[in-house]
Structure formats: C-alpha cells, structure tokens
Image (cartoon, rainbow over all chains, first blue to last red; front, side, top):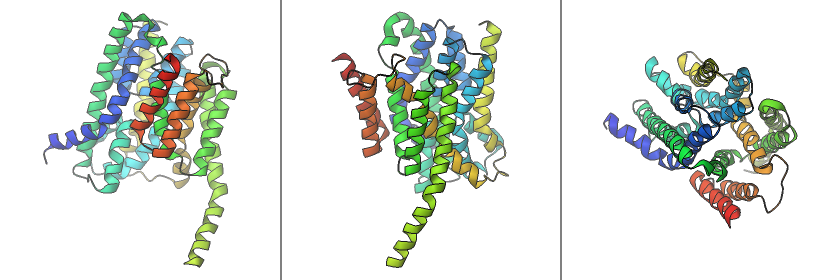
Amino acid sequence: MSTFKEMRRGFVASIPMIVGGIPFGLLFGSLASSHGLSPWFAIAMSAIVFAGSAQFVALGLIALHAPIWVIVSTTFIVNLRHLLYAADMVKFVRHLPLPIRFIMGFGLIDETYAAVRPMYSVGAVNEATGYKVYLGSFLSFYVMWNLTTLLGILTGELIPGMSDWGLEFAMVATFIGIITPYLKHKSFWLCLVCAGGSSILLSGLPNNLGLLVSALIGVLMGVVADVMVKPASQNDKGVQEVKS
Amino acid sequence: MTLPDYVLIIAGMFIVTFGVRFVLFARADKVVMPAFVEKALKFVPVAVLTAIITPMVLMPNKHLDISLDNPWLLGAIAAFTVGVWRQHQLLTIVVGVLVFFVAKYW
C-alpha cells in the first residue's frame, strides 16, 4: 500500500476524536481572545506547543498572573502522562531514523496514541506501516487543532459571550472518555477518588498547585493500591489453578 | 505581561512538552524502562485528568455545588456512567455533552 493510503488509515481511525476535538480548538482560540491575549500568542501556542489540555491550563494560569516557572512546570506535569505513551511506543520506533522519531515525538498526543497503539496489538500495522498510519493521525489532528484555534479566535471576537456557553464541558466529557477505560482495576478507582478528592480539598492553593499535588497523590495511591492488591490476586490465581 | 514573557512561556512550554514526548524516542535504540517507573506512570493519565476536571465539575462557580441544579455535575455523571459501562469514547462525549446542555438550557 502507498504511503498516502497508510496515512489515510491513520486519519480515518482518528475521525471520532477529531470531531470531539473541534470544540476544544474553537474554545481555546475564543478563550485566548476573551482573556485579552494576542491572536498571535494563541496561534503560536497551538502551532509550537501542540498540547490541548496543557494549553487550557496555561490560559488559566496566565489569567491568574501565575509566574512563568509555574506555567512551564505545570505544563510539564500535565504532559508527564505522555512519557507513559512514549515508554509504551519505544519498541515500535526503535528501527526508525531520528528525523521520523523527532516528528512522532512532537505529535505524541492522547488521541494519536489511542488511535494507533491498539493497531499494533491486533496486527493492523507493522514496523513498515505503523509510523505512516501514526503520522497520518498526527497530521490530521495538527491541521484540525491549528484551524480551529484560528476559527475560535475569529468567532470568539465576533461572538463575545461565547465563553459563557459552557463549551468547556466538551473537554470534561472527553477527559472522562479517556479516563473510564482505565477503570478496570481497583487501583485506578482509588487513584481517581484520591486525585479528585484532593483536587477539591486543595483547590484553594495558588497557581493551580492543587492540581500538581492532587495528581501526585493520585499516582502515589494507585501505586500503594497495586502493592496491596497484588498478594490477593496472586491468591486468586493460586485458587483457580488448584480448581483446574 | 510583556512580549518577552509570552515568548518565554511558549518556548518553555515547547521545551517541556516536546522534551517529555521525545526524550525516550531520541534514544529508542538504547532505552530500557525500569519496571517500577512504568508501574507509577500508568496512573498519571487518570490522576492528572481527574485532578483537572473534578473542580470544574463540582465547583463550577468556585464553590462546592453538589445538586441537581449543577449541569456540570449531571453531564459528568452521565458521561462517567456511559464511559464505565460501554468504554466508547465518542458515545461518552456525546451523551455527556447532551445531558450537560439539556440541563443547562432546559
């Protein structure tokens, strides 16, 4: 199959999440302009940083007049989840030339990982085709994100009340859609409850530091739950083995 | 903020975002992930995304609002229920957004 056809497969697999992402791009552009930020700042952030949720968090922090180091370190924490994706993808990119790994790294977002990673598991892609499908997914998200950012800036200026419509809820719903597939084990439930509970208790901390601390508490409690649950599951396995 | 501040924000955000995504790919031919790191990192998506949206859902007006008059809470409960039940991302988003907007504008 040609490179173009492989890239088109990546685009087709990404369509549901591209549709889901359109309101976020529009919202990002319109929120940036309703916060009084230069259109060029929003355009540059979408083109250069290319990190949906971190861009929203950064807008919130800028509105709070947070120091730059807090904005950058919060961005780091918000995007730290991509290290997990990278760790999981390493085995599929080992053989690729550095420039291609460079572009794949730039485009390693939740959606592209979610769209392409399962294809490796079911054998829909291999070493020769996987990166082309991946790049097709990345490029379609990149074009969507930058176009909708631009449109959001333009329509946000045309429709001043747009930020009161509650379009941000689309982000909440998408994040819930990313979170829920993880909830197959008790440790992830504990992680969710602890991170969520902490984020409410710590919401009074300045500069969104409550988010940083809550996320770390969630991760820690997940690890603790894993350690405590493991002996029990091993016992279950032993019981099943005796039965069979 | 001044223009250099905005340039610094974008440069800093680019460096940490791209750095996190690329650091392992850069040395993909040599990297071996320690098991304990992977065990902790697997919780980061749930922990961070939950910590971002919980205050948006439970404190939409900066104070705790656990009531049927809070469309954020109703929409999130609907999305969460569908998400846990069907594990279909687009369906989760569509149902959540529909419930939110019906609750907000009904």
